[in-house]
Length: 562
Ligand code: ARG
Image (cartoon, rainbow, N blue to C red; front, side, top):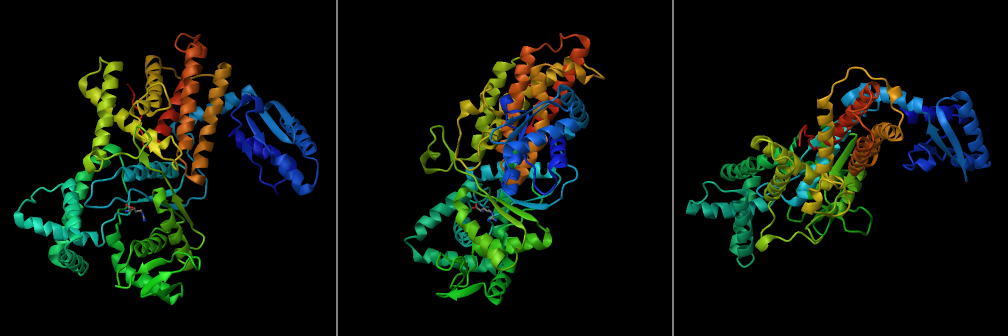
């Protein structure tokens, strides 16, 4: 890579004791690449930064005079580099040769990274909040794997706790009426809501629910059977959505899985003197006077917190996790920060990374909280179906000649892609809106725009084949810009492995697509002179590869036709 070559050149002149950072200014005026290392060095050595910058320029140029088109020094001490056409042409050959593997990392330290995402709660329809966790989590999973790490995807199911006492009680009540043959998730949720409402004014109902959860916890056969039924109804119904979204997990270890370990966790915390008894409960004080992290209530019950500690321990012991990423909404920030502190205090976590990959809410068209129709929650499946229907209308307009089956296939790819891209193209920490027209706009920063660009490139490539090409025929400004952009791809991936923002990749792909579109709008490809045509087709092929790889990493399909 050009960037590493420049870093090596600089290191030869200034030595190895300082890290050389190279940035891509993104503005021609400040060079293809730029470094502030002279400024950093000047501080350490107490010297004049401009002088150091000058000497870097001089040394680098004299070791490799042909590598650069020019090098400029800019006060107070920046060094800006423009690489020569020849270097870009050669680099393009490397990019082209690596095909779909461009950007894939080879020799980095391989970490075991557990990604905790899509922790849906069973016996409930999937919420829109879990949609974000799923989309972001799956994209990070793909990207981390692509960059050479071992990604371990684990969906931390909410499948245990006192709510199942309520649900079992409500279920048994209904069972008497024999109306329960084919109950849906929606139906289960209604049972739950109805029972909870009645429970408020009727302590008898509450007692029954408590009794049922006790029985469940002591492995009463009948209750266990009902609970298993809740699980299977959930998975059966959600299979559809998971298929649509194309998500897969390595593990789905729910809260129930950790239940048998919770007693030991509490004793361990007490033994290590991390936890104390406080007002009958067992708690971990994180910062002395702040809200404590409760791990056992005075009635003996364990909590979400206790399960989460057990989960960390399991992930460290069994998965040998070097890093655990929680793709969970902003609203759990406090819980997770307490968890991270607690497991460090307990010595379960030593040097491993614990990170909360936060995300904001999903809002409606008007940027207000998604309103629920008549008090009902919004069905995720309906949202995804709506995306597909809307996409189909557009596909029909754009390409009426396609056969129906093909239209339907493309509509699915475009509709789901639009939903995912809408999410992943924005900083995950902000709230996002479901603005259909924007999401499905073929001209704007949208999934369909990128997919359409890809399909167009593929259609050009179908029209003309080529075997060999010579990169010296690539020398127009837009061609150089495109090569530089392709060169940036591995760096974008690397940045995401450091702070886990998938929108870096979305932004990058959008810029790549825009550059590509202006490239083939301004220069002939199929009609160009023979050698030029072959080189331009090669460029198109390399761009198509990166677009496809990038979209796929985001979990978005790249259609050959549209
Ligand atoms: N089931 C939880 C919820 O819906 C999310 C689980 C997140 N993961 C975790 N380890 N706590 O809020």
